[in-house]
Picture (tube, rainbow, N blue to C red):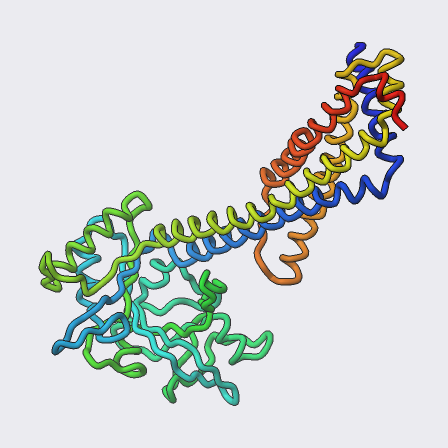
Length: 413
């Protein structure tokens, strides 16, 4: 009971001493406020960016693998991806048929084309694919329907539009389903609108495309140097646990089909979205750690400011300390008083900094359009760390005050 009363009196005395110099106390807390606010804001930006990238990667498809052409050598001339395609429709069909860990397969050919609707036109990506594209890429039609296997076999002139293309070719409230458009001067019927997916982590607009049957793209619109070649193969694994097995099976099968010897370089690459997600997460953690380190310097500067002001306060109140000791106060009571003052300064500054940091993260998200994600552990950790800073930097001035000689303190002018 006596200890609680002593603590209450000490806290009251400390607050009274801080209120005596409001401006100085406020300026002392400023370093802590800026430090805590900076930590919370930086962590929110880092985690928000990472969450946005992870969400965009997930939006590309479930258990998705991508097989892309690799380097090739023809007549002594080497070319990378974008030169001569090394993947074919037959490769895609073989992967689906012979790899047990593969659930489904689709493949694409793509090219930038001009799309026209009446007086409006738009340059976009035309992409030929199979009906399995909807399932493998987890990309359904929100209006209308996807094309069928019959459309693929007959090379029907039907297409689905991404939301960006719809926005540029049709007016507000106008239903594109059933409309007739021209793609490279070829008439097409719009049979559906794809679900909006937004931008990828590297800034590409996923909704800026037109999807049509692969046979239609190959024979009637895009053309091809070699019939049956594809720009990319998308593979959906049976489950997340079988992604690694699916990669190994695909690699072994393509080695066999492309007659690649052990000492030869692969002419394809199998990529996993899991690897991309891990790489993004790793980069995000490094960036967040760097930002956190820079922001934490403000907390240390704030702690030094607290120690400096308390040392000045000890000098100014030397006579007061002597009087308190003369009437029976012990060294630990003086130590506790100045320590409470330091902790109060840092904790109030930490609370104000948390509020500023949360508001700052929201403002950045609203004004700059950057994704932010408030982290409760970051807010709580910054607040508690500000208290630890108060204890660490306040201990030396408090200890110095508690060791003053009462007689010398009373004589101090």
